[in-house]
Length: 119
Image (cartoon, rainbow, N blue to C red):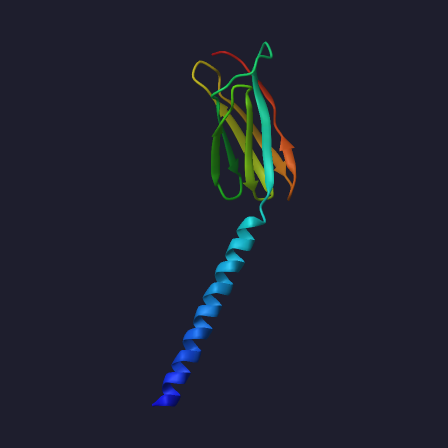
């Protein structure tokens, strides 16, 4: 009986250690993606446009992230995996702008700056 309890205890410890190791690996794997797309959205006169919704979509996985530009028109989308992205900027009263095939490399910052025109 005692041997069986010891075996169960050892098995339980092994399972807990394995689960922790898998969890740490998953966190480490997710943290590897540190590429960034950033830029500034301006109108045709060159004035910054704040409050624009910028959506970055991975063309392979279709995973999207959206951010809003700040008052200076700046946006930054961090934590991206390497690959090709589509960047879309949308704002009421302005024509939507889309930039396709933005190549992002691991650990790199990719600038995408576009001028916008009024609708």
